[in-house]
Length: 284
Ligand code: PAF
Image (cartoon, rainbow, N blue to C red; front, side, top):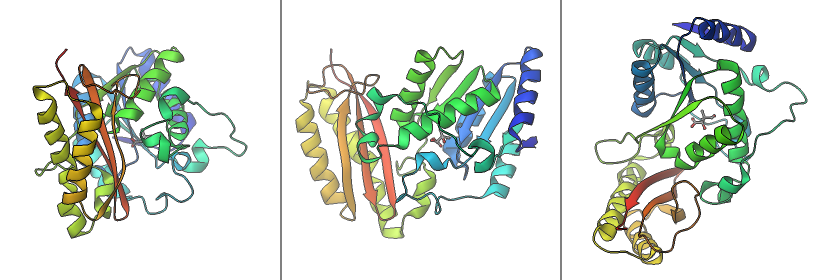
């Protein structure tokens, strides 16, 4: 496995790989790998010739009051795990390598970034779209792989790729969960024991909603009300940021669940803000 920090070197290596006709996959990450990341790497390894993993905690997607400084980092462990997954190139730039003084170009997908996580993190997706666009330009991938836990992020990246005519196939892969259902996330490490015990109810609530819509065309408001009560009862240490039912691609609110609908939630729990989602398939 090559470890490259220099952006120019990376771009040159990737140009060479492309000229050899090799199919390049990029898995963009912020490190502190868990099974979710590793599942993306495994898929990419199996489906492409060259696997590049970027590891960069991108400051522009954190607001000043958020957890940039505390975000978990463990480069040595990540290197070992990447090596074991057969990663060809681990890209580990520093902030100064990616954001030059006077950086003033941003990529925004405002229509998809306003609601859900965008409502409480108004500058987050601008930072994500910009860094992902930069990573695409540096690694020149044929395929880029993202987790579906960050559904809004995945949707925004797909739209960016479509709108900017980037020749990249964006692949979303299923959420990987702990045995009790909690979606894997680097931020789970922030949870205390009590918070961790309550956190598994986030997914249990989503499953409850799925059962509710199985046989009927439920109103979104009915689901939201039931889920709010469920979370207040089972996650007393938590504070609901949002519970939303939206069109899976447009991310616009849905009032009747009569077609595939994304149920997405975000909950503040201790120092963590946890997100999760499920695709509900009502009749129709
Ligand atoms: O999902 C993440 O880890 C980050 O948002 C990403 C896509 C690597 C961009 O920094």
